[in-house]
Amino acid sequence: MADSKSSEIVNLYQPKKRFLIPINKFHVSKKLFKLFKKNTYTFKINNNFESVISKCQLANRKDHGTWINEIILHSYINLHKQKMCHSVECYDKNKLVGGLYGVHIGGCFFGESMFSDLTNTSKFCLLYLIAILKKNLFLLLDSQFYNEHLLQFGAYEISNEDYLKKLKTNLKYLRKFIFVDDFHEVLSLLQPNNHKS
Image (tube, rainbow, N blue to C red; front, top):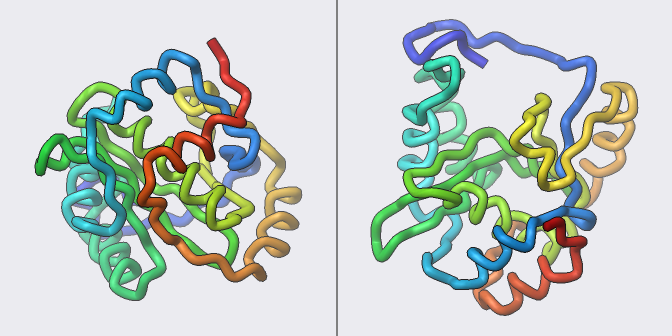
């Protein structure tokens, strides 16, 4: 992580606790699921990765800063070219209005950042991501640091020691990040999860 966009240094951190989003026990509120079901938007993966990470870099944060400097930006673009980093994108007609990106290694997906230009569009991308991960039998969705916003989806903390054990096991599995084209299938992949009102 960088201290700011203009920083020329990247800091490496190892949190004492790791924040995970459950894939098979993912929670979605009835209200959000109902909005998602309306299918107002179009979703794609890896269609415009550079725009997604650039918008994440520019997104308004509570502390008015970003941890994505130019070194990180270009590093993730290179990972994307190596097919190790993916984006989930939300479009209103042909305009990119929400997205997220992360790194894919083995059976693990490491969420990095997300943005919304319209209400709920980053959340919708997260729902689509969960469907993709479930369909392709991913085992670990790592959100890294505690984020109160993600608690609504069932995210939880574990000790770094337990996390490293999970990581070691799940990196061994070979999983492909393949888009789920059928929106009804996406809904069915999300439907069995416990809804929260």
